[in-house]
Amino acid sequence: MVSQETLEKVKKMLLEEKAKILRKLEKNMEEMDNNRDRQAVGDDADNAVAMEMENLMNALSGMEVARLRQIEDALRRIEEGTYGYCKECGEPIEEGRLLAKPFATLCISCKEAQERKKY
Ligand SMILES: [Zn+2]
Image 1 (cartoon, rainbow, N blue to C red):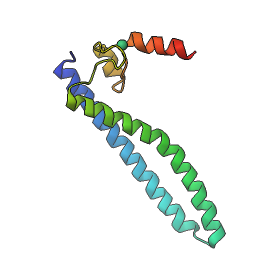
Image 2: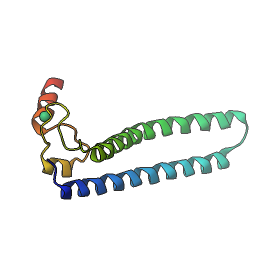
Image 3: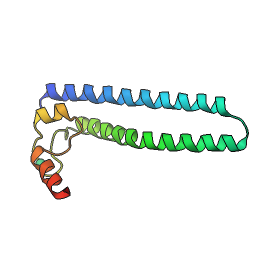
């Protein structure tokens, strides 16, 4: 069972992380708008810039979107009361591990087993 204190701490960390990512995405959007305004000359140039920006956004948001999804998932599990239990074995995840890695969904032994399988 995860203590209320740890849950509160983790929730705060998750919300802060979420706000940080959203701010960053907003900034990227603004920069994209600025670039578009500056470089809007002719259709060809326009398309090239649009393509480049799209690639950039995809690369950035791919990572960011994945992180946001993890955050939403963890927040949902906190609400549901299933947060802090290993997805594999159902045992409680060590609180120290949760505080270091709030998105952890596996306990250390399952995580290690998974990594052994991977390599
Ligand atoms: Zn486990």
